[in-house]
Image (cartoon, rainbow, N blue to C red; front, side, top):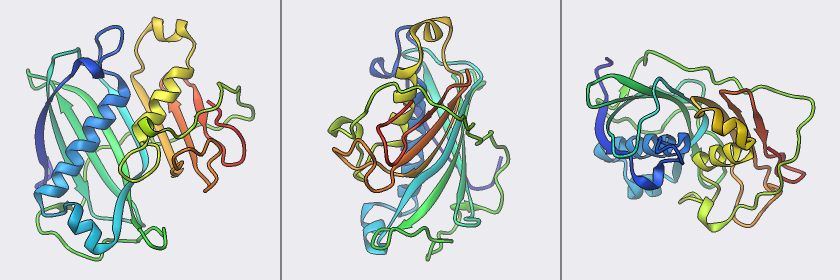
Length: 237
């Protein structure tokens, strides 16, 4: 284990379980996002801190892998650790264990730090926080998102109120919900999604179905499905 890490617990809520009473993959991403934010706040990086520095942390790439999908009401322990920024990306690995201490899931997130005024990615933070970063963080998941020549439309998705987060665009976890919604019922009936990898180029703002500001998302699921939200045509999955 790296020297600098943060741990907290969570319980799989009813609202986060699917028709099998298993944790939805998007819910795991929300748990990971929460423990990451709590980690930052524990070291003084709260809302005021980011307002004063005029920056925001955003997810650029993200992957998750279930060893075993947890069930509703299960108690989980999330342990997260962050690496120093390299080439504008901050690697953060979060492991999830069950009550017996066995690994049930891993999430690999590559965060980017964005200047709120210019929208530009910063190469590295303009501050230091003692005992927060690690020189290196072990482990990684495949962050590759497959390309395909043709996509089959699964309909149009608007960046509605319920999908958008505090940064004013669709939350990264909800793209995974949209991808799962596009899967045929027989695929979901065959078994849960146990792996996903997705990349966000720019957030979709509220009410914009076409990504008028260049919003694009690409997602690869464990069963090989690819979804994308092209910036100049309706959202395709």
